[in-house]
Length: 340
Image (cartoon, rainbow, N blue to C red; front, side):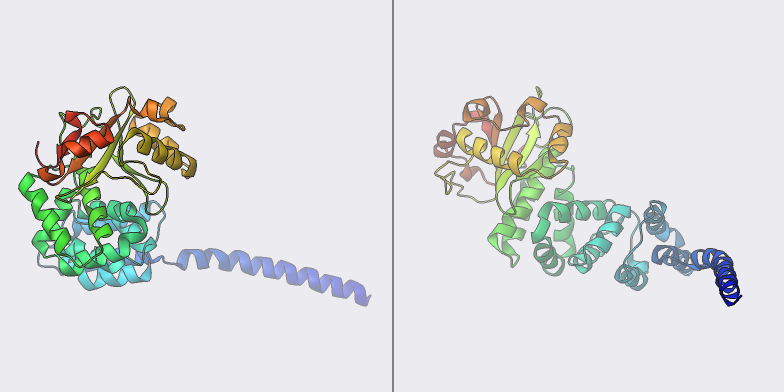
């Protein structure tokens, strides 16, 4: 009898627990408010208190774009929004930028300050792409940009990272800014390369850049520091290889393996290393750029001779016959950025 009573008690307890859980669980879910939802509600209320309420519409839409995909925001992002909500200008930030700030705390304050410093449409998207482009160097580079560049200088940089083509004067201005900022020479070079890739992707030097219509240029690194500065697709699906330099005296000399930069042997070596080290999705990305599948494998110097190879510099003085001959380039393969 005692055993039967004990069993009945356990059964009754389980039934009661299940009933309570069934009642409580929906209430817990319904009452839970994500940070992004709370921030949107706050922003909508604050919008009414602004002198020009419509100025906040784009920022609120960007937050809603994040919420729509089920993403949330970090508490620190919420704090930045609440602190500077009245300073955010239309179009300066977008969902991609907000997500990046949440997932990349090391650059969060710097990119937010730059977005406020350059209140132009598309700034957030450009900064999000730059963070990905710079990789592990992004925190040090962006912190220096945010603190050492004036609003006008930062605006020129942001423009250079878009398809809007720069004049040669603007290219020179950017080069001088990079050299003035207190950062390592490798970081200066990384910034110039990012600008050069964006400009070539936007159609700079269109008559000679060797790219098919609408092709983009991406970096082709095989480790955190080494690789090919730029890769694009030619009209027939062959790779187009770019080397970029912001220095007045660029010398295409031998690397640690004795291979001359941009030569067919050097390109084949770096291409093969990139293919071997390619993370998941990398080969597919190159294929989407327009590079034919037949080239997305290890290659030889003989095959590279059929590809376009371009040296793109900031100063005409870097274009020498010695460089051209050393890398086995043609006369139309030496280009000055901004000289369209």
